[in-house]
Length: 261
Image 1 (cartoon, one colour):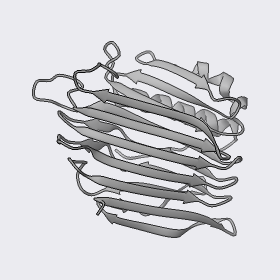
Image 2 (cartoon, helix red, strand yellow; image 1 turned 90 degrees about the horizontal axis):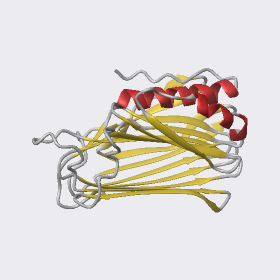
Image 3 (cartoon, one colour; image 1 turned 180 degrees about the horizontal axis):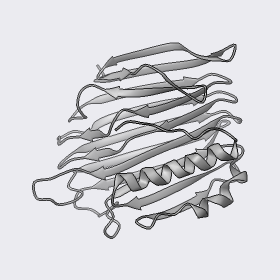
């Protein structure tokens, strides 16, 4: 049996966003909605305190046609030491003219942690996705960085039935110092899939931060991916907020503000 399970299906009923299915079990819970710009914002809650060896979690999220949803985590997710990986499998499906913003707090891996994250996203031709994640290493008794045992993540996005984007990250202790880029300790990724992406792509080079290294690539004319190396979570969050502000400004929408602390 899974340590935690979450199933969500959102539908549009006369302009109102309502869940056709909302189910959470085990360590996963779903907070009550907060409305932002007329769109429901839900907090994904983990009541177990963190991931440990052998944990398995599944998330299934579906947005039917003409729906919009903001999803975020309540706080950073912690992964503790273990002999077998904690595994989180997420499946997301977006219908026509749907929009999902999935904005996640940092994933923190402590000494000897082992973690696998598998995410698959199916997009219709006219659906929109904003997806962000942050990763860093946690405290260790020796004060060394990146002392976790294994990290594997995979994000696969299909659009209109065809593979659109895939990103794999694999790190094994003692094999390489991936993520330890110079003096940087934090890694962030922001993926945008939007049919209007070509209207704001040229503005991305104005988004800089003096304490970060930032790179981005165009995903055809329908999106972009931005990678960032930093020394603090707040620096990455600042860059991500400015990206979201740019996207909202282009669409003449109010910026999204997530108050958590």
